[in-house]
Length: 278
Length: 351
Image 1 (spheres, chains in turn yellow, green):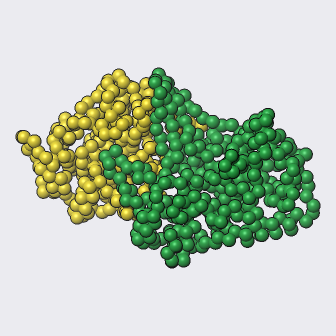
Image 2 (tube, rainbow over the protein chains, first blue to last red):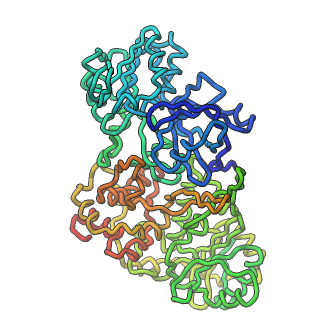
Image 3 (cartoon, each protein chain N blue to C red):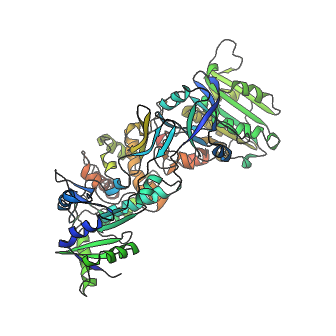
């Protein structure tokens, strides 16, 4: 019987600074066979261990259309993520996964796509964003609406510039606290509705961010005519095992780790709301 | 195989024989007169002493035997110098004297740990397992409500052997092929009963059922809980204000399966461990950012009751409460599932 709790060593091949306390780690399983057999889907997550510090679930930010490596964008926030940040290129972490369900891909072909993210919430969306761009002709117009507290906290800055140049693609940015020379909007991400027209016709929206941001974005999307099934989001909960056993990420009868993390607003509406999902 | 008879006076000799092949877990009285499922020592004076502490009749173990398969604290793997060695335990286990409600709890946990991803630690521990149920002739606790929960006092299935107590002997019902093999192997202890056994056993069981005084409308509670937002927030808030969030009810609960995971390090060696966790603890859902969806106490109270009586039933068709009554018996502030059920089905304030 496979022991699903045993993680396997992976080497840090590259580290990129993204924001103040956020780095992207490019990883490859040490064992060649495991590395070659490893596949994942957009929206899934890994369980990352630094032995002696513990384990944390981290969403995959690289795209399955670019195989051979795995990228995780991690903010130094808790014990495990701080330990990961202390490692250098060539260092070793331990991985198991991928776990959880995926963002739809085939189902959203031929549509206009709105990606709406707050802060490090862009990390899981980036997996789908690059997958979509690698199949650009299958999709219609793409808008990326991205906000963070300050310009320093915007992730994937170089890539945001690259995405802007892709045909039929718009990238709109906003920050709560501007710095000198900030040329984009100031305010929460829903302020971007003033900059660009949000049209629900033949469109889906993919949302990820802090709970308060999700709440306002979803209200705004509904106001703009998006059906509940066309608002797709990835949820977060304190999580330990990642495989539906430890119980921590339960909401109602669902496990975020197994039934999610990707849900439509239609599904989220059926969850018990007294716990405040976002 | 037909029902057999085991004389009470032969019990100790039988267990001394079984201990050669199995790790035998049986309720034993400790120095405080509390009953725990403990493994018998394999031989010598220790075995003789332990056998002397066995209590089978009216046995009321502090916690269910779930910790034999899901220990309160266990190691998942050892690590040192970058290498990982899994620590899996799979010794043959014979549980002797399991109550019918606790059997339901074990079967519930089996199903949970097998579902979707398989939990190797749990499943290794149950791989070679033999369960002897001892039906309760009278309820070991005043808080027992197995008849209402339809989980006891005798089991219908799921056991290898089931003991039905009768004066100086036990009728032994055989529930599996493993049970038959066990009887054949130890045949000198198992005799054929007299012909009227088919009349006597149902009478004993009926009398045992009638002796369970606490009755609640369990099925009605499950049906009410299945309705969306049936329980007013005020009810949970009232319970939430009384609960002291000690987690005791969850530790003693036969169907609670939640755990925490952490690393324990000494020098360059370490262990990945897991230990029981409880959804009533504030830290259970607290995220690194400090955001906590169940920060408010009443949300944790509602989680506890809705998980057991609503969501488990919704997902598996089996309630997460087996009516053992331990939650109420162990609660410092007199809250328990049976009281909660009474409150919602009888529409009166009890807690």
